[in-house]
Structures are given as structure tokens and as C-alpha cells.
Image 1 (tube, helix red, strand yellow):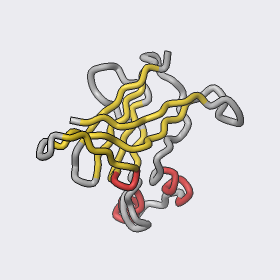
Image 2 (cartoon, one colour):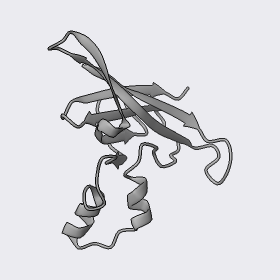
Image 3 (cartoon, rainbow, N blue to C red):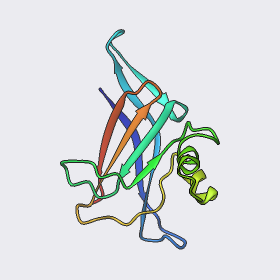
Length: 129
């Protein structure tokens, strides 16, 4: 069991004014072996996923990030395997801990799922109202 440390904030300036962005800061989980809460920072996040309009039932992944991925892994590997031409600048954005700007959906709720380097998954839901 655990919970990611996720901040969702509204963008107040620039071309994306009125949209939102999410940032993952790390995660906490309960270590059943030691009986303690342990924290991991972003260097331990293998993958995180964002549902920008969570309906309360199931995750519909709209953005997927691979912060630990090397230059040759994650989305870059997918592009190579598909023999597709993908914008390398955009690939870099999907390796980070800050989402791309998004507009709130009708449910006004965001869900972020974090998977750490050991495969432990945790989800945080944030209401936008």
C-alpha cells in the first residue's frame, strides 16, 4: 500500500493559461517487512500515468511517463521498434515528472498512478473543484 506525492496546479500564465498540469514529487509505501512507511523520490519512479478526467471507476490513461528511461528506452524504444518518426523534443517531456498541460474534463478529477522501480503501484486522486 502506498500513495504518490502528486501536485495538480492550474496554469495562470502563458499559452496554456486556464489549463492544469500535474507534477509527481515521489511516493510513500508501507514496508511489510519492517512495518514502517518508506519514501521514494522521483529517481525511483519507473513509470507514472495520468488520467486527466478520472470517472471514479477505472483509469483511462491519457499521458504516460518514463522518468527512469535512458535515451534508448521507454518511448524512444517504442518509436524505434515501430520504425516511426516521433518528435524527440516530445519524447523528452514524457521522460519527466511534470505532465503536459491539460484541460479539466467533465468529472473534474485527476488520477495519477505511480509505479516504482520494484513494480509497486500506487494511485492518488485529486479533485479539481
